[in-house]
Length: 113
Image (tube, rainbow, N blue to C red; front, top):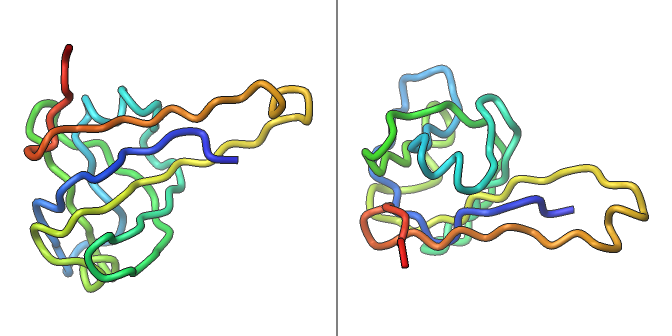
C-alpha cells in the first residue's frame, strides 16, 4: 500500500552519468518518512513517465530533487513529479492505515503553517 508521498516536487537536477537513483532533500525525506535506499516510484506529471528507483539522501534545506543515472532521461529540470513510497501491512494494519502526503511549495520547501 502507499505509505507516503511527496506530491508535486520540482526536479532541480538530472545527472545522467551517475550510478542511479533519486536524490531528495533530507528534510523532505524526513517529512514523508522516506529512508535512504528505500525503493520508490517516481511519476512525472509533465510527461506521464513512471519509474522505480531508490532514494539517496540529499543535503537538508536545499530543495534538491535530482534524477540520477538512467532515470535522468525520464524528466527535465523543472518537471513536477510525485515520489511514492510503499509499505507492507497486515490486513489489520491496512484497515486503519492512512498514507502521509507532503505538499512542498514551488521551491521544494516544506510549508509551515
